[in-house]
Length: 346
Image (tube, rainbow, N blue to C red; front, side, top):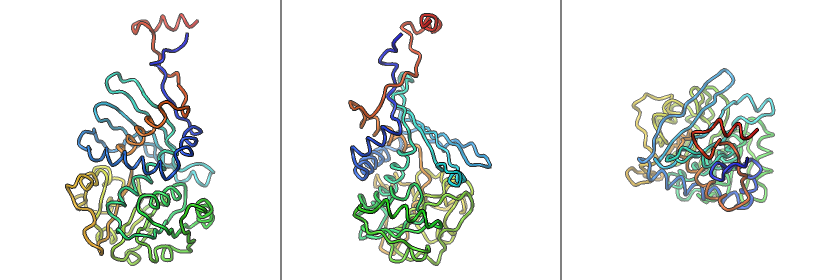
């Protein structure tokens, strides 16, 4: 028995995702995803919102990130296992699904390990376009792991940086990042310390993976007027910045109820003021106010960003060969006769 067309779900594999990225171009795809995220953040109030649902273990965390705008439902499955790197495995892997709210039928299944890196970079640079100094040309990239090249290219494409200063405790990671960015149009400087990396930087991106209360940046390293893009802290006990930096900064977050649990601000009192990004994007709150202000994006990743990325992929692959139809729904001609469908398959 052949499955009906309505029961076939488009599936974007890792191979097809990579083909799609090469077809569109990394920087163009990041910019397009950012535009979708911005459009969805501007209709923030139409979404169901909840902090992601975690299952913590001594080895890492596995999370579900669901949301819906009333017409489509989306979720991402994602893990965070910092110890994986030492075992030759990815720290983060993910897949995601979109479904039609009216029928409940899935409408897209896709890998999201690659897509998460793209949407994280898109979110970072989108926020940077609102908060970073307008004359920013140099970014410090502290933590040169799997996300680093995407972050550098995103800020090049959307914020106009032309120089990146790289630092990682593992010199091999810095060499890897520098080699991958060769020919990108960026001037790449390999640094031997965080202090060296942030010299002359207008934007500081921190993206480290240790699951502990780490201090990647101390207060004395951060001068006035910079924008900090803190994307490494994303679960309880995992932070990168000294508390005093937070106290000097204007802090911007995706969803306070989640960020207070998982972000840098878990080190602050629950009533410490923060600004929600959707309010900045809709003009209800101010972004950067002056040249000396320190702005901090306490990024933990939120389900609406994944929803936006999923919707973008759904549109991008429609009518192409960058997906394969997946037979994953039992859909008998008579919806009451599932058993009959099973017997006829014999």
